[in-house]
Structures are given as structure tokens and as C-alpha cells.
Image (cartoon, rainbow, N blue to C red; front, top):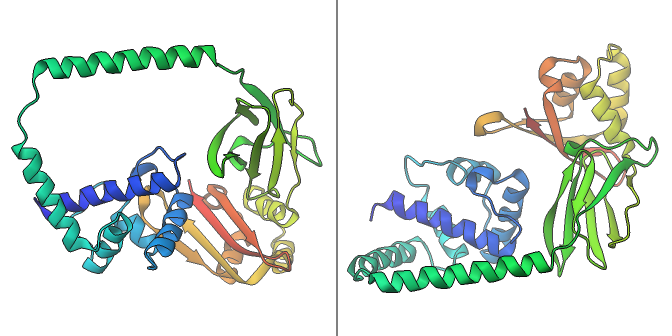
Length: 300
């Protein structure tokens, strides 16, 4: 078996291992988000006691094609994550499996038909059960606690927590779409609003209100508005941005990540530009002084 083909299979196994830890993720490497990458880095650190950089994952795992193999030490880390002692054992097992599959005889047609019938019966039973136990979908508005205006769906994410497992909740037109049970725990997160955890039930349709993060809102105003007073911008940025600020800008088409410190990022904010308005903030973190010390941006 070609080593690159083995590596491609290893990428599939890494994704399957990730999905066991985060069962709500049903995508592929192409849809692997920045948060998924952070989760994978943490998973490797806990299970393998090794570190993998965000840039390495973008270069070697999210890429649909690989022209050459990564370094062997990195292959060892991924192989250990999926349950092997290292890359050498993984390659050996892959070649063994290839020999076994090639040696297997073709299954008889009647066995195939029996399998189809069993699958059809299972699907009919499952669909019948779903129809009998179908719950009504609730729609709950998400609003700004101060202005009582609806919050843009792109600026907030929601997850349902059940048995310590997080499942994404759909937000359409600033409204949560959910099939609520007797007691459903929902966590709402946003770069511009303070995180909030609520418990809703089947009868609860009261709008959910989120409290804005003042500094994050000021930053949003700088990035989206046409304020011309650069001196005022500069003075306010000094107050809300920490001296050790780190800004990561994720470039389009998987071209990598740009890094900015406080001075570099402030210079971009002082003078409004078209490229600045095309930047979408997806994560803001603050220190104990309530100063913004980390920003993650997606270039649109």
C-alpha cells in the first residue's frame, strides 16, 4: 500500500476518534472549524501527552490532498491517538488488513438480499417510532438585554447539553429552533455578549436576553462603523485592549493565519477600510482587568 494512502486512512481514523469524543460533530476535515481544531489539540495533549500546532493541522489534516508525508514524529503522535504504538505499527496493520480484504471471497447474492431486507425493516420501524414520538419544535427569540433588539444569528451560537454531551442548536432569523423536553439546558456564546446558561421546558417561549460585553461592543463599532475621529479611536483602544493582546486572523481558502500584536492591530482599527469591515470576529477573551487580550478573526 502506498504510504500516502495509509496516511489518508490515518486521517480518517483521527476524525473517527475525534467524533467519539465530540459526537455532535458530523462533518469532514473540510468543515473542521477553528474550535474543532482547538478541541483536537487539547485531545492530543490529554491522550498522547504531545503538542500539535494549529498551523500543522491546517497544512496536513484539513488539506484534501497531500503531496508528501509529514514528519514521522507527527505521524507517530496521530497513530498513538487512534490506538497504535506509532506509525510503523499503523502501516504494518494497514498492509495486513489489505491482504485480508483481498483474500476474502465474494459474498453470495442471497446473503446480500437478506441484508437489504433487514435494513429496510429496520428503517420502517425507526421511521414509525420517530413519527409516533415526534415533538413540536419550539422557537425562542434571542435579544439584546438592553436594547431588546434581536441579535444577529451570525453573532451567537447555542449548544444543548445533555448527559455532559454538547449538541449544536440551530439559530435562524435570530431565533432558536429546538425540540425541548421537560428540562433542557442551553448554553449561548458570542464574542460580543456574555455567555449565558438557561434551562427551558416545553411551555417556555420567553425571549432569551444576552447582556452585551461593553469592550467587545466598542471593538465591534470600530470595525463596522465609519468613525473618522482617529484620535478618539486611538485613546479608547488603549483603554480596552491589553498590552499583551494577541490577534489571529484566519485567511480565506486555508491560506494560513496572520498574527497581530496590540500596536499592529490598533493601527488597522484607527483608519476604517473595506478589508476591516470584511473581518468577522469569532472569539474574544478578556483578562482579569476586563481588558481584551485575545481576538480570533475570520477573513470573509
